[in-house]
Length: 159
Image (cartoon, rainbow, N blue to C red; front, side, top):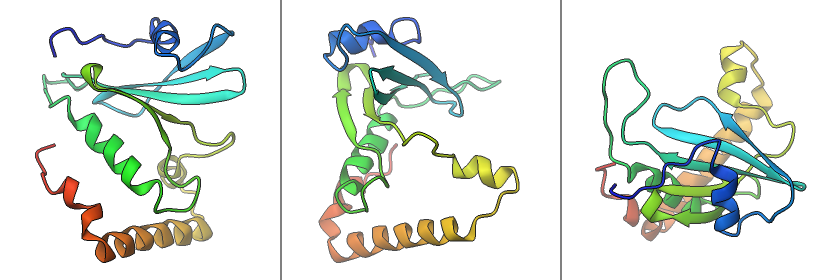
């Protein structure tokens, strides 16, 4: 972790420009909530939106709770493994990885997309959406059962 650049809403645009992910055009950044173990930022430049995610060593919990920074890469690697196996738009595309800083950048959900967990917590039940989620889960099991090599990189459960 020595030397890790901590990305914030204040320095994210400069970081993204330095990495070549956005140009000098006007851009904006927004802190997204929901997680306790990462900072998650939405970055918008021109008509393109992306999400930057960076591990944090200490989780945002009441009591001190520390976690392995490498856990962010398990998510990134699973996304990269599933992206070509599932229907377009199902899994975000990984656009950039900065391992020394525990960062990855992914495509953003389409405009108007809703978070299914939030819908369920609000009591909104959409059976058609539930069927689509079940079909995607079935595809994940089918692909990984047929080709065990797809899951071999994930046999280490450390993170």
